[in-house]
Image 1 (cartoon, rainbow, N blue to C red):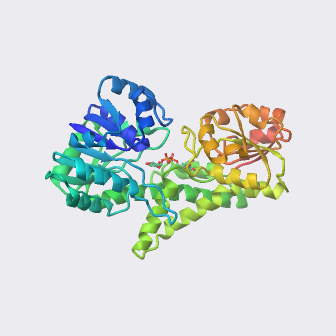
Image 2: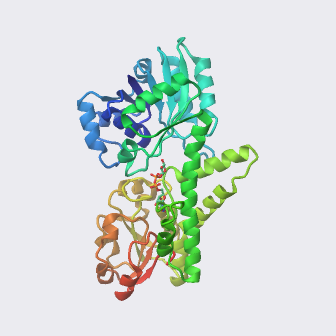
Image 3: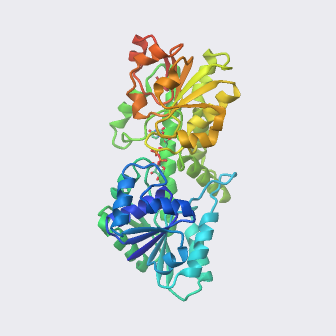
Length: 431
Ligand code: UDX
């Protein structure tokens, strides 16, 4: 089987590599960016992802995967085309489907044999019906073509592992022909396959992401209340987690969720519901709580610190979570912007996010290669991401290196009692 994949972002590239690795098909990854394609042929991943580089090199050398800008021949020879291009957020919160439109136009013009088009991109419910109609109406060659919805659930930082050991594979189709093809593609994965119709598959993706976002927002809300009543959110989360109906994942309070999915998907679902004159009140609450939570540390710090003008401020962690260089919707962004506005002299450290951070903050802040350098002589330190080297940092050094050891920790990296014993002024979330 020949599979072409449109788009080599997280979803497209990781899906392609995993399909090649498990011998599901010969995979051709299509991207419009020539430099990116040339780099990928050399085995260089365009994103930071554990294990990706090794699998790219191996599968490329074995001829199981290729990269090209030549969409015409890739689509002409494909039995299955997977659409994995981005669906970024428009200013009103709705999903921008321009990349999808460009790809389906190319598909309609170039396919020459029966072909199943599979949408992995997260798209509003009902979009796959429209994609199928569009392709059928604009087909140049008379072939059988159908569209299936096949959302993915990979997390950045563990994308390969999440794909190879997927908790479930969702297949949304309108015919047995399409269902059988997708089942065949995913047979080597040996994971539970849930077959449903296209709209339900589209909804499963949004409902799952929104539920997880809600779970985090709920814990952050409760964490804020814990602070007021004197309870400890970490103990509360552990106590809750023993109930199997609640589970032990996504109960970590902090300074809110970021990334390419939760902020976008919550707003997109809320926006879609309003088009149907329905208000998703729970999702709206999650969006509001998350926005409020992002600047929680700055609000807390402002109660103690009157002004930040010319103050050396250390920022530890920039990316939206550890294990990725992705800065999209990272809570660090609004915090740093707020500190820049207040005239702070910021020294930021992140093990892999510096290059992407430079694109956002340019020379408005200083970038450091180590935690030591960031905190030396700093008057206050904000922790934005729980990178391992930050969590495992020798806390005595805060006392030794900082001008004043004051820490605002947005990810609860350290034990409160240990900081207290060292006489470090330490503020965290919900405890
Ligand atoms: C998420 C979903 O997990 C994944 O299934 C979907 O396909 C894409 O969106 P991702 O954005 O990569 O994946 O990251 P995830 O690990 O889910 O974390 C998202 C955000 O939530 C991060 O900012 C993280 O710091 C935050 N988070 C996560 C919490 O604040 N608390 C938690 O308990 C878990």
